[in-house]
Image (cartoon, rainbow, N blue to C red; front, side, top):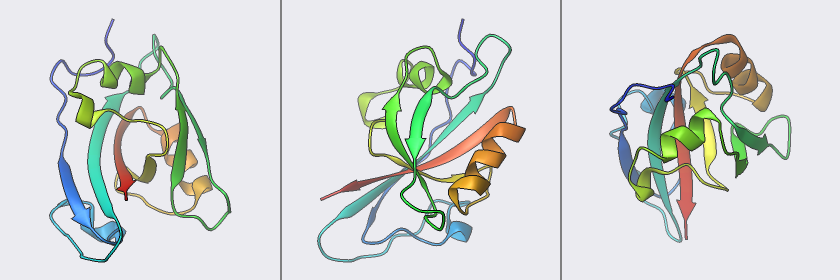
Length: 131
């Protein structure tokens, strides 16, 4: 049983350079240029249910001040694995992606974890750095 809407609304963009401010995530239309890497930003919307109440991610952060959660593993059976099974490969959440905002909120790992824990409907903004 899928937890999410049959058709995922997924926004994507490629940003050259450094990540943009959290206020720019809402319209997902901002790009900055810098040398050495590209930041691919995309949005994933999921809904927790009694059958599948968890994202199914192992995440971490190297410091309390770090403003993202680093995806270490996508677990089978979670909401993100279900999302991955319904979208094209370039829209898959994968290891080393970063959750930079949840439901329009950005901040430390504790802030992001808190928003994830307290809400059933989640809009997650991911970034993937490509060198």
